[in-house]
View (cartoon, each protein chain N blue to C red):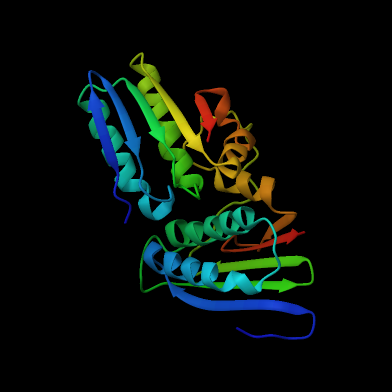
Length: 103
Length: 135
């Protein structure tokens, strides 16, 4: 099971999934991110350092967080994505909606 | 693992319909892939993950009493992934025809098949998928 780490400060949060963002870990990441938004976070950065794989469930969690934050006037960004994961974001056209950057 | 003429590697398993069982199979695959042709590992693992997750979530509805049958076979430069579950299947003819706008939170799996597989097909009832990837 992935250990999600969230560091919060003044309405901003840095999220470190701590492992692959896939079907088996998506629920814990979704819960942690929802809790942060409910707690007042509006600017969220997801650090994918060390993440080797994201599947459709993981993409769904990130897009859902983006949609929620966007409605609240906030934003989501993804940083330190591997080349393969960047390609996946582009193929799924997700990069058109929030910032996704590589190593 | 079986080795045959013109077949580099083959893995077969019948798994309970849980994500934990799917993860265990994926871990075994990752250990064994050292003997497989050096290709785009990300694409192969992603396709395998999507097929297994669909079978567990939608076919078995996470029921460990139901089973997922999985075959992964290399023949030359061609990879075949075949996954079948015991569910009722789904209407694949109506799936994935929407425009990919980047804001969907579900239904992305079939778009991943479309982008990463050379070709794929479902059986008539939609509870089995075969993915072909040529390298």
